[in-house]
Image 1 (spheres, rainbow, N blue to C red):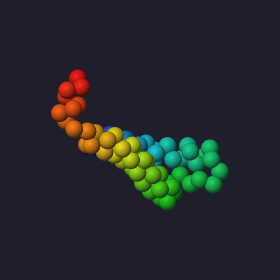
Image 2: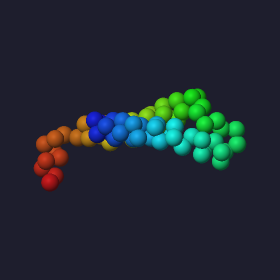
Image 3: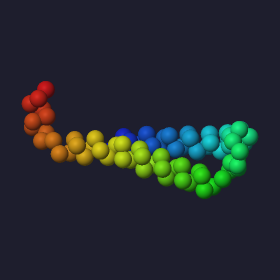
Image 4: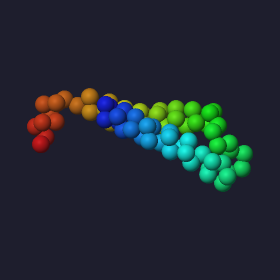
Length: 75
């Protein structure tokens, strides 16, 4: 789960400044979207964080239920 959160932090650290820089281009391409709309920025950030945390939590939960001895014997 730590790796998922690290990747999420790196992605947000790169993505948020890139979105701010490219906001004027996006607003010129889409009707009704402002360059720096805080509502859309926060909603998108929260949605991406929830989806990535869920995507990491499901395999982590499955892995935590497996007996380590059985996993080592399988290999």
